[in-house]
Length: 574
Image (cartoon, rainbow, N blue to C red; front, top):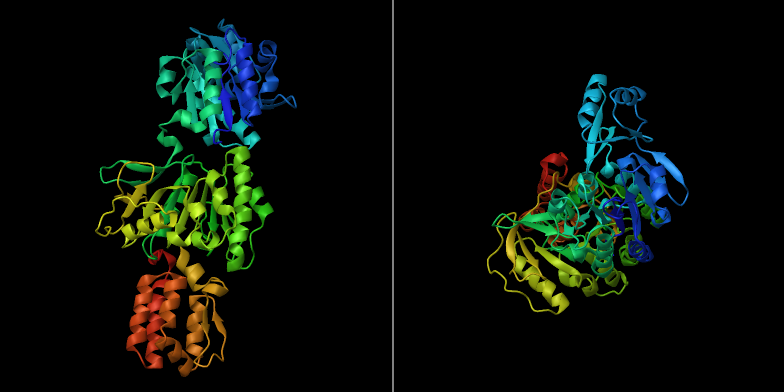
């Protein structure tokens, strides 16, 4: 269930001549029984609404006065969302003979008195706006409308606008319809409202709302296919210029390929796009690569593991995304820890429609193919972006939900073939040539289109992984370098590049040359640092330099060129 809330206008939408019929009331009851919420968004003043609508108990919140007043029917609590009308303004309108209705914040009249209202606003120098509603003229402070009122109601309920469908019929409904994830217009709506709606009902007013509710209960988001771009995240651009979108209410995605191919660059861009689009994201970070990602709340670090209560608290606010750093959790314990965190996020998503995305970096660490931790199957209910070097190392249950595959690096066709082997499915026709620099091979399983090379979205800012994590951070015991010597008499752990260089200078020549000749340094850089360019340079040093002093100096220079320079001058190895 993705659509969690229905936001509906009252007059002309839910009600006819101020009355909601019994069939529409029954539909609202069915919607609430499905676990969904209902918010009423109206231009009426609250006392008037109470008079004409005895079933306000059907609504979780009421936004009255066109966005200026929030009411909780369960507690009877009223919360003004705008200041009271200026007494001078009200007096000026009455002096001009304008018929008025004055609410807690709203001043309302009828056409053709808008000219007198505008004149009074100019004479008094007030920051007020006029909104029309089928002949009604509503005056409110600038920025106050049905969209701002709905936002306050959703904040009160802990819901995201992405999980809301808004239905209306008139000019003043545009704002909250376009601010919602999905919009619908009843059959009697104004033509301009129908033109911008995602869906138009066949029946008018309350019967149209009941029709919409029936479609929601039956099809949820599928009632609105094809989906508008405002509810999607752009991931790449095809050669013909058309965008490739990810859908939070569709299948998951896989970003895969060899180290150095651009996985972290694309993954970072996707997370940025999701957050910029107002989606809530949970990034599971087994290796601390997102420790400096400032657009999200960080939980855990190299020494302190994240806690489940911290995650749930951080996710309370729909606008906050979270990075769950698993670096302090032992490698063997990470799959079980991930299963616990992901299960809580999925349970929350069932109640609130969010988080909208999980991004699982180094997915083979927490969803390994050889272990059953139940999280893979659970991910079927929540879109996840899985990032890995090898699809066959990831749980098939987790991969089964993937619809969009982005293969990066020099051998993208082999990556898609590996994905298909992991799922025991036939591969699509694959191109023979390598990708151009900066491209990815994209395949959407649900589409008849063959895999094609696309230009992935670029992040606004590269991840500054190298200086803090690899140069100065804590890689963890499984990723650290160990100086043991030819006889295994030592056990000196270097948990980052800086300590590695310090130890390399301090160990005896016999120990240094032992590791150099065994190719241990280049192997460590390839496997733990994941920088193929630096690993290749280390291999050349290992092969060419038998002198301990010269080889130490060459290795230091190679490492310091990339990992001790200012972060902005480095390159993203992933």
